[in-house]
Image 1 (cartoon, rainbow, N blue to C red):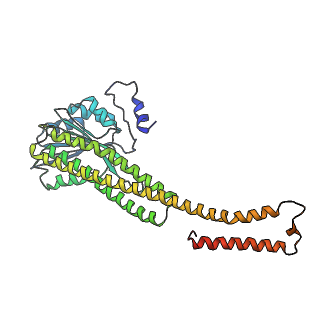
Image 2: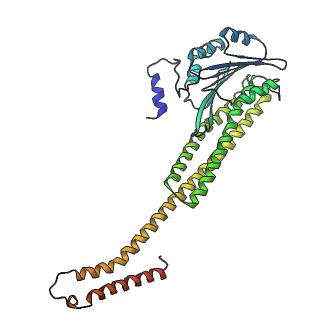
Image 3: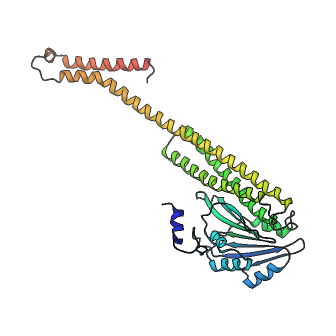
Length: 353
């Protein structure tokens, strides 16, 4: 049974919409942040009350509410109540084993993505990020605190680009673009690993190289599992004809789609390279085994006639003339040595050794 199935089994027998966190239980406490902005003003708040959120929701401008950590289910329920989110949406936010997807609920669009990154000294890690796009608000939910969206916050604070002048859909695009850009950093890391592994593989094939190849293949599978559904989700956003996404901003979502296609192509290239490296490893291991068998076969072939002679003179017959010769023992040893040297010279002339 896979880990995902084991986690989902906790919900067996419960009614749809029951809020239970499914996924890795991070130790970080929940952190709720808010940014409301327009071209003229910016308001930032942290760990505010539900009443303050209701008041901010009524004010003009784009409202961005971001929740780090999903352990506080009560806080998530409160956000859902204020923004009128369906219980199944809240359930999907807490179920961090969701595949990337996009769903249009008319009043808002629900998007699930995977933030894939390489923690220091660890294997590839996938973290779910859920985004809700409304008429003038964006809600984002992240499994644990991170710095992924800090550049976007800084861009809003310093009023760089057109983000303060654009609507909520432009902000949602920025969040999604930051996640997709993270894939390129992961690919660069994998590319460096493949390059080093390829150089080492040419020099010497050892069992740890095989383990490294399989580990990289698993990481590429994780990437591919996140990318193909995400490509479908972005395509749905482009075709949705939703009033929540301005026609002028559709080109930005197409840009994300182009980036995803580029990442998928790179992942496929890496998979082909790893398949070739695996073939090289298996061929090298087979060649090494053939070399060992070759040496053993040569040794066995040399000893075959020697064993034959030893077998003849090891027979306990009463009348064997050679047994009575004074130099018979040394003659047989000389004959054996001559045969062995002769066979070695023959093998060398044939370039078998």
